[in-house]
Length: 272
Picture 1 (cartoon, rainbow, N blue to C red):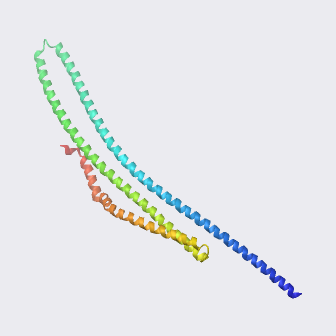
Picture 2 (picture 1 turned 45 degrees about the horizontal axis):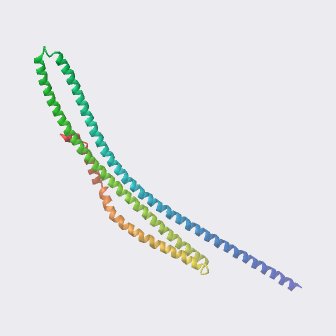
Picture 3 (picture 1 turned 90 degrees about the vertical axis):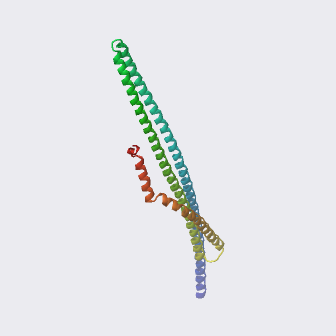
């Protein structure tokens, strides 16, 4: 009777052990499913980061287009300002002419009143008016020369603004290239994440039914890294071609030269 009791207890313990093992197997299966869901979520996050990087690249391109549009608008504003200046000069000349005519009418009225008594004085006044007209003609000639020199100054300043706008365009292109390189580095990080994930699953579960998925994840990671390296090398070559031009434009000597040219352009004493 004692031996039967011991066998019964042993069988019960075996059954409990089998149930415990089944529970542990179920738990491991649930954990594997949770890890798979987590990997899918990480993959989705990586794709969203890549999409955001693409959007940043597009926004950088749009900023470049806006910068070029601002340059065109600045040129148009310069032309409009020149037109307004010419109109203002013409209005000034017309006002001066009206003032001269008003003064002449006043003088002629006074002269008509005193014509009978003061013909000699009228002759002298005519001589004085002729001299005044000569002086006004000389003044108008000097003002015309000054306007021409100011127009030349505006032209030089417009050329300087155009050069600065080109520098802004080059910097915008360089920012676009850097954004593209950030996108390519995100591809590289995504590929490394896939390889790490596939390696982790392989080391964790070993060779089994899920090894195919692990191999696919690792392969996707390798392909992402290869594509990122290829794109990055292409961007690096473009950057190497672009850097000498940017360094030349942004060199201290070039900046000092532009500042000196701007100072020389604003020295009105050079007109003499």
